[in-house]
Amino acid sequence: MSQTFQNFIAGQWVAPTTGEYFENRNPADTRDVIGRFPKSGAADVERAVASAAAGFERWKRTPAPLRGDVLRRVGDLLAARKEELANLMTREMGKPLAETRGDVQEGIDTAYYAAVEGRRLFGHTVPSELRNKWAMSYRRPIGVCGIITPFNFPLAIPTWKMFPALVCGNTCVFKPAEDVPHTGHVFVEILLEAGLPPDVIQLVHGFGETVGAAIVSHPAVPVISFTGSTETGSKVGETCGRMHKRLSLEMGGKNAQIVLNDANLELALEGVLWGAFGTTGQRCTATSRLIVQSGVHDQFVEMLVERVGKLVLGDGREAGTDVGPLIHEEAVEKVERYVGIGKEQGATLRIGGKRRREGSLAHGHFFDPTIFTGVTAGSRLEQEEIFGPVLSVVEVKSVDEAFAVNNGVRYGLSSSVYTSDVHVAFRALSELDNGITYVNAPTIGAEAHLPFGGVKQTGNGHREGGWEVYEFYSETKVGYVDYSGVLQRAQIDTYGG
Image 1 (cartoon, rainbow, N blue to C red):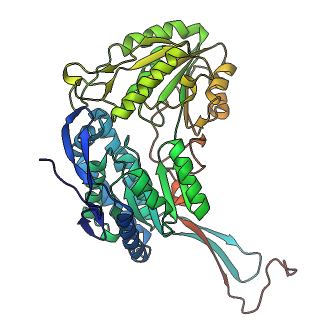
Image 2: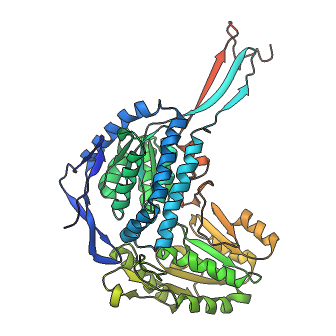
Image 3: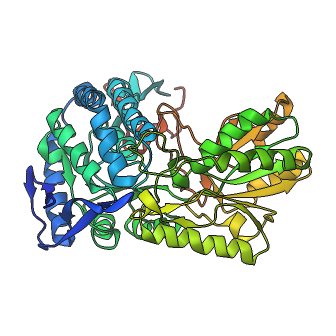
């Protein structure tokens, strides 16, 4: 009998008001039921927001360095439980243990970075234009933050969002993706064990169209951070715009690795294998396009096909597994549709292109790593996000054409160029229309202390990670202190008087 889990609302683990639950199953073996989780409703969100609002009144008065101390303890707990957390994440969402260990490490790094930022929430002190007057700014918290996260980084992404929000003095209502509720549950347990006050964090399980929508539209939640599809992000943006909420969107990508004639091909090969098929292609930064200059195209494609043919599919907890399952049946069906689209539009299927159901793969959502060549710029395979292990190869003649193809999509998250020409490398940093550009490295690999995010339909201008995210989760307050003892009229006609 599988375990039944609960929400965490108002300082208690509680059943959903709906009385309904959904099953969470292992995507590598759907016979393995991880647990039953609350299928919550708007009433659960209402209770959670009320508790978080009450908690905010106390938490915002806690000195920021002390808030940071709580997150340092969270980092210590994550480090101590790293292997346990990696195992439960792999069971829940499929990617190999080497990757889920990295997922935990991102959370650890983010915790320690946030802990230090508790002493670095800088404002500015500047000269006043008037005599005997002090002018300054400082940062203060905003209120209740709605945190809505995806399945592919079950721990890392919640930490990217919640740690900065918490150290800035906000409280959080957290809805993890319904595909990875167990990681969300354990994460909240760790936050509480580290000493986070119970009304500062609320956990509400459920589905986006009910729980997510209720959080986004709640008038007492002034801040929303959402990671998911561009289509859903557009709907979230419409609601938040109408309600004047602060909103951070991290959405889709159609990232390209560019391999030029002067590239180190062995290095570029390792990069594209990791970028395209790590996390089974289920990353917003995944390498979905490979843009190769004509002089090395045929050789590089042959090298790539040979290596992809050796990748091992399987349960991510088993030694030797290179590629885990897709997250659910709908993801498999989507990848199958795009394989059909690629064939219909004249691309050449070089390897893969089918789901796997034999032997130990029989009960999982497995799909072969897939490569299409002869993909034309502007085709659906080249333009649309697939979120699976499908790589589209586009041949180009020049650097200028490679850059144009990279920029010719509606997304702008990550890009990569492999070259030995320093001039071209710095051109790429300037000209590739993405929030992140890597030189001689794959399109994946963001670091916790640098801003993360994209342009165009990938995001709405805010960044996660690094120092910029602390500005998103706080308001600038300006203070003036006039100790002259007389009325001084700034910006009138007394300047310099």
